[in-house]
Image 1: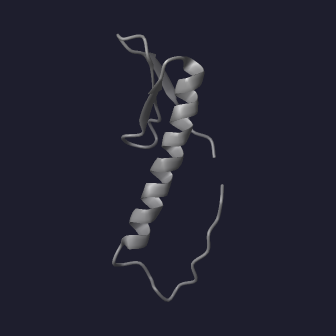
Image 2: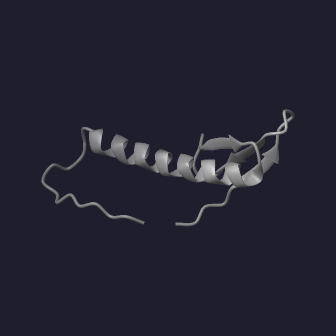
Length: 71
């Protein structure tokens, strides 16, 4: 998958990385490369958390076949 990420230098000199397509998915790093590395981890965690929320949803169809797909 491909996500657009915005990078912005904070007042303290750190680089703040945000993924606008995933609300609340924000990270930071001491430099641009570390911020990008950290936002990649944040994106993975965000997607995992959303998947877990959908599994715990009471309306989840228990009769359907469940498989894992990696992207």
